[in-house]
Image (tube, rainbow, N blue to C red; front, side):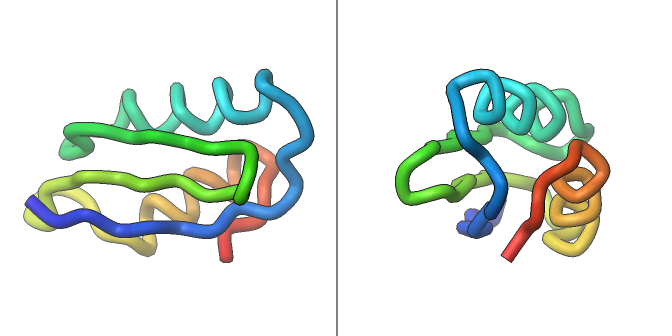
Length: 68
């Protein structure tokens, strides 16, 4: 397992964090996703054999937010 921190721009409320958490948590290979409105980031524990950091960023972008 690996852990990565991804900055996320564009979140403005608890609903935003819930949306990003749901998208990441439902991804195969993600063991844990903790999304924080302030400072605007996601800490994700994942299996790199199943999913990459780039894919996680793509999922965040598809949910309408800007991964940093």
